[in-house]
Image 1 (cartoon, helix red, strand yellow):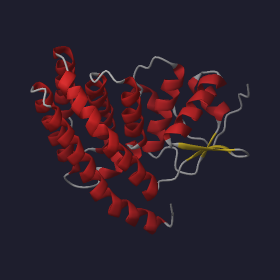
Image 2 (cartoon, rainbow, N blue to C red):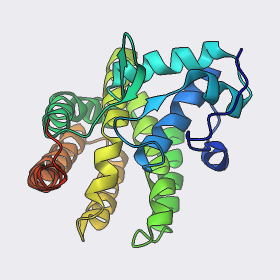
Image 3 (cartoon, rainbow, N blue to C red):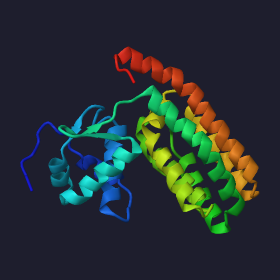
Length: 243
């Protein structure tokens, strides 16, 4: 394995304290690279060096290579024959595709899980809800923590549906949306709208009201789609980047 340091490649080690526990090294690497991309540490169009990432994380090439493939499927990377793995550019079409797919599937997951949620799951959701409520989302530093907690909140709920294929689909789409979710926090009241969504989901799960949970997710996803499409179009137009 090559050990020479690429001085132009960003140092990923400051992100290590933010990494949560994962069952596989592949998932760990994928999570770390997602955060590096979301935070802008690795910008769109940047080539990822497998050997440098392996060196920084103290891992073999295998989990890094598998993480690249996973991130390609999720839409974070494009793997080109002669250039290797490239960070995908932000794209209005990509954003809209992700949210249209979320709209087609996530309300179903919300309905099924709310109808089947048990006391233990509800208690876990309520703990995550309270942790999110304690964050100050006017501070950019708290966004990362919020998005990690929100992901676990939704994952905890959707697992209750007992539909592994549906769970993998909706959580994969949620992960693919993360770059755009971070951008949506530029809209003044968007963080408070997230809190309202979580409140409504908690109430729906307490009441085992699947229809209410589905309607909540439908409204939340439609809101982000409607708000972010013109914002993203303006940003991409101003930066000179197309779709």
